[in-house]
Length: 348
Image 1 (tube, one colour):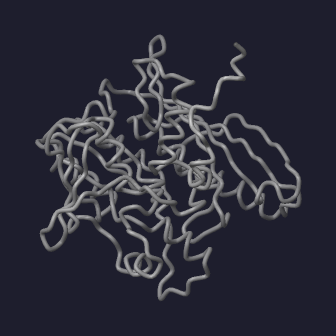
Image 2 (tube, rainbow, N blue to C red; image 1 turned 30 degrees about the horizontal axis):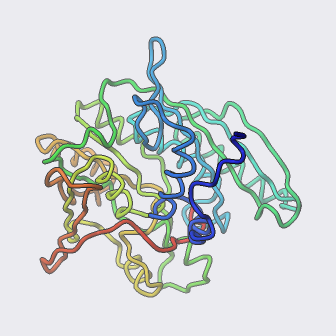
């Protein structure tokens, strides 16, 4: 039987939302990936699914990741597609505890893109790479017809070296682990939506787009045991927690009062009808740390961002796909589910 005649594993006409989701972070996209991608390109058993793959080579261990950036608008308060491409890839490497070293860049440029726009993006890429202390060593450029590329898309692939013996991945999460967050949430997604929808807010909300590896490397240098890390991109804090709970088979409880959300971000979320727990970030991560190391880890994180906080803990082994609950500010409990509807479009 010709492999190309094998029936599609899911009826795509039943999943229109998947095709509109523009990335991960939701139930429908997760189903699409599991049934159509992961089932075909099976990972070796020793490489668990994570933000970057950890690969053992003779004499060294590296992290390897790739991502694509299709954000609209190209420029927004606090960043642009250039800084996003560098920082997003650097941060995926950092989530394995790697020291980012080298990046590739692939440009898909729409015919008619102004040269001034391309130059701004390239200069932003250069500046962000310098701040993150990574080198762009290879790349590719393609041009598509006018109306086919929305200005410019960027793919970035990154390689980093792992200089420790820890296994930083969901399978390392244990009951009793403290859950730390590196700062306030929701700014990136709301910054994008405010510009896109022309919202006239009292203050300009800037994206939190930034590299994250410095704080993680500092924790490792000071001997902090880290069980798992995850950056809070598409799907935000809620989706990241659900993904880890499902992968690790654990139950998680977080406290709403400990999660920092700026007043202007909260107000914008209320206007737009968004839950800030699901809004994307590009400079925030969560860390699962053994309880006896949580205080020291938090002190290190707060030296980089005063809004870092301890937001909850792993309460036990779960059943099935794991569970995330939230204790509200008034003391009630609710389940925090994986995002099931359409996400904020084109936020990275």
